[in-house]
Image (cartoon, rainbow, N blue to C red; front, side, top):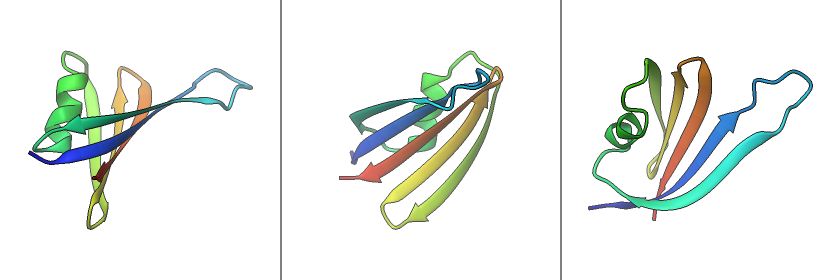
Length: 75
């Protein structure tokens, strides 16, 4: 099963605060989209998947009004 470095950004929706929450971790999964859907399980999500390179997948989500970005880079 492939290993990825995951960069997870959560946008801050508060006015006058442009900071983001950014988390880094290593994950093992067969499919990044399925992994993200399992993280956001039970929420009303909109999801778009972009293959941004040979070993990089970027997933943008909007779940219950909260925008998040997941960048998977194969190790």
